[in-house]
Length: 101
Image 1 (cartoon, one colour):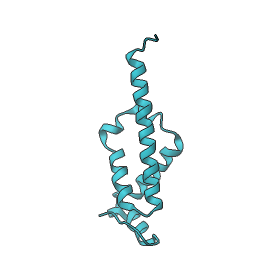
Image 2: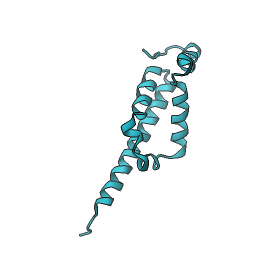
Image 3: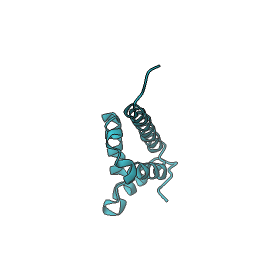
C-alpha cells in the first residue's frame, strides 16, 4: 500500500479546485454567449472573492486560455465608469438578453 503524505492530499484538492474554477469560467462564457449578463456578473463576482483569490497554487493550475477568458469577463462586468462596458454590451446585444439586475 502506497503511503500518501499531506502534500499529496493538498495537491489533489488543488487540482479539483482548479477544475471547478475552469468549469465556472466556462459557464460564465456560456452565459455571455446566451446574453445572460446577470449570470456572468454573479459568477465573475464569486470567482473574484478574496478567499478564492488567495489560493495562489490553485490559480496556477488554471490554463492561460481560461485566465484570458476570465480577464475579458472581468472587463465586461467592471464597475469603471458606472458599468459602461456592461451597459454597452446590453444595448448592442441581440434579444433575448438578461441584463444585470
